Image (cartoon, rainbow, N blue to C red; front, top):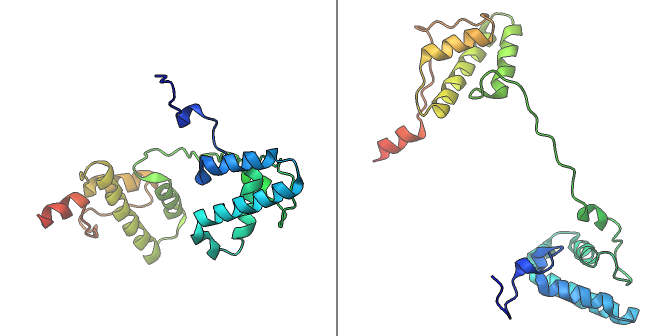
Length: 196
């Protein structure tokens, strides 16, 4: 839809730092066009005062003035020829986008237990028999039960947990179904039902 006289932000040039708004960007663009360095300097200082008034809470940080001058340099595309009271060469770091981080993809047999539990299964296989391994196995089994509850909408049974524990530890951990001590926890649904 194109209505004469209406000017939409989507049709305008993209803002470099949108938090300061289009009017401040226009002021910066105007400051670049000024012919004398004194005029540009006065205009830049006025723009900084306006930017400072827009975010008074930032005054509490130690380097807020430096940030304002860095932002001014970025908004001008580093074309504003003035005497900056701070070194704005570090502003290039702010202006450049960071490299995208790679998402760590681990191959795990079942997603509902998560990769951390598979690290624990590996540790359980390597641990010597004893009280410490038994306690870790119990805590792990309870976490497995909790994860199953979350992923399968409350459907979790001790037999599945014990079976999976044995399978993923290559039979090293064999919990007794009758002796399995389950920590009681309640799902969100059951807590909400009790409140009503």
